[in-house]
Image (cartoon, helix red, strand yellow):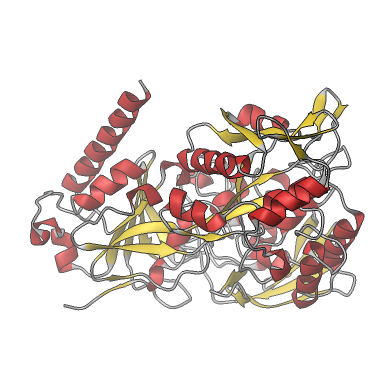
Amino acid sequence: MQKKQRKKRILVSILLLAFSLCTGCTQGSGTGNSDQEDKTSTAQKESKDSVIVTMPVTSEPEAGFDPAYGWGAGEHVHEPLIQSTLTTTNAELDIEMDLATEYQASEDGLTWTVKIRDDVRFTDGEPLTASDVAFTYNVCREKSTVNDFTMLENAEAVDDTTVVFHMARPFSIWPYTMAVVGIVPEHAYDESYGQHPIGSGRYIMKQWDRGQQVILEANPDYYGTAPTMKKVTILFMEEDAAFTAALTGQVDVAHTAASYSDQTIDGYDLLAVQTVDNRGFNLPSTEPEEIDGVLYGNAFTADPEVRRAINIGIDRKEMIDHVLNGYGTEAYSVCDKLPWYNSACEVTYQPEEAKKLLTEAGWTVGEDGIREKDGIRAAFTLLFSNGDSVRQALAEDTANQLKELGIEVTTEGVGWDTAYTRAQSEPLMWGWGAHTPMELYNLYHSNSGSKTGFAEYSPYANETVDRYMDEALAASDLETSISLWQKAQWDGSTGITQEGDMPWIWLCNIDHLYYVRDGLHIAEQKIHPHGHGWSIVNNVDQWSWTEE
């Protein structure tokens, strides 16, 4: 039944694409002939300033293109194309300016003063002022369903070009928040804004066919460098349909997965973008106890030597080669390669040392090859989300590898309705990765969301780790905060690394893969966060076609 439904979805996607192409909504001619000349759309032959890109169906914003409801944030975090932001980040994730011309935090970190440009207009002709900025952030503070704005007390427009953010608590990494919040017009904002957004960014949303496509056109009055790509069409498709669309020459960029990576398409090259879109699993680090009817902790994984043995007993390279066809990088933290990453997180594959750690900790091998200690079996269930073939394969590979250490792992697919609760006592294969050190806070800080005294997603607490992260948020500048985030991972004595508590096991960062039509130059990509979606078009305004 599932295969039939999947085939039906693919057929519907292809038919919608064909209809769109025939009615002139997108560029391609859609002939599907094997000859490459026939596969190249008529519009593309005549125009070198437009592009068609596919994205997963999950990338379509359910609530529309409204920053208050997640557009530009969450797991598909990016810099909004339609709205302007106060700041932006470069390829190294350093903060640069967009609307803002300067910003400054008070010594106590409770006030941020931002000066903005005076030459920006919304696409309806109205000027963008500090009042619009303050309005946007106050709306996000009240309504945001994705981003956390609890650190913001309120935003105030002092004059047309000055906005002051009054903070409820110090938040040194506020510039990273300013890089993903698109500014909306106070005069034209209502409940339907997300369906018909007005912005001041690089592009204007000309058309949104829900469930099918979004068409963007360059903003002729944009205050920055004029986009090279004048028209960008985004098609929302399953991976199978995206592959077919590239195979038949209907699109210029098609997202794909490692399972397709050995397939070649005439006229296209495979682009692999490095990411911090990591996969790993939590190891509940406390002894079992029931709190408010929920079981927290795990008798086996509560032993820190068990967690350390697992960390060095997994061959990450083999896992990447076997599950991802080589398209990934080994992961050792939730923030590999980001400015706040501490390289002390890295380990080498040492299976014999892992066995030694377990034996010395009293976990002896039984007759069936599985270890036990004081009547506790060296075993756990590793959960993964239903329908996610990559997470399932990683879970099964983990089970196979840990069996060699004398650890019995049973894999089980679950829905997210129960996964969060069960992860408090059973490891779960997760996906994380964002352009903010708050990812560390959310996973490891004991006050990050739970009333139990544990971190939110898996029972763990370390006062020293908490203190470093609190100090990082209270720091007077970003540079100072980065060293504190690094110390939270490992300070030489304690932390969340191999020599520390090791409450999470990180396996791999999954490359984001795309089939790209010959002649199309994709501008340099900054490392992608979690989510195989909008990040690819963050700088679509800088893409170009090779002149023939």
